[in-house]
Amino acid sequence: RDGMSALEQDQLIDALAASLEVDSRVIRKKRLLHLMNPDELRRLVEDGVDVQLHTHRHRMPRERHLFVREIVDNRNFLAAVGQSSANHFCYPSGVYAECFLSWLSELGVQSATTCDPGLAGPKTRMLLLPRLVDSCAVSDVEFEGWLSGMSQLLPRRPIRREVTV
Image 1: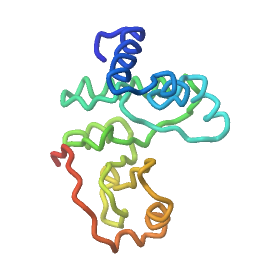
Image 2: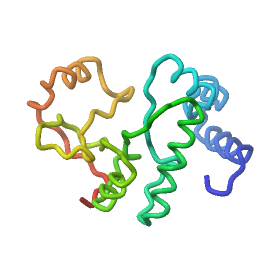
Image 3: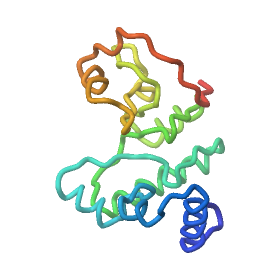
Image 4: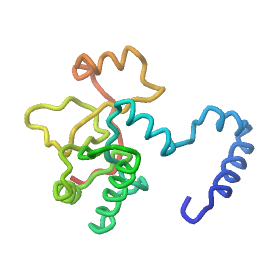
């Protein structure tokens, strides 16, 4: 992705899809590999959806100045689409480290969600909140289990991800 133009990225997707015998036109039509564009985000905000922080480039740099730039750039982008305040954060890919907690606090971030499954309790750190990562692979019954809290009573398979807290 780095250093590739949009056209080069499209050509890469076309080549990859062709090698997998997948029609890339179908992927594009369904927007399976797309992010929302600024106009779509603006409409969501106008419709009352509260869009909050991520890193702007979906990176989690370990250098403070680069991390701060990610949050500031994302806040500025959200402000440009009409989001009046952005003080809640979601760790990209669930990657987090202890150093991020103080940096987020300094930036006025009030809460942050990990990709760690679970329910938050009174002792849960606000910058390390667990959450359900919803996807097409989550059945309606599993989703309802998370909403009710019952899923906490069931055994889970371990999830591997980079965590250094």
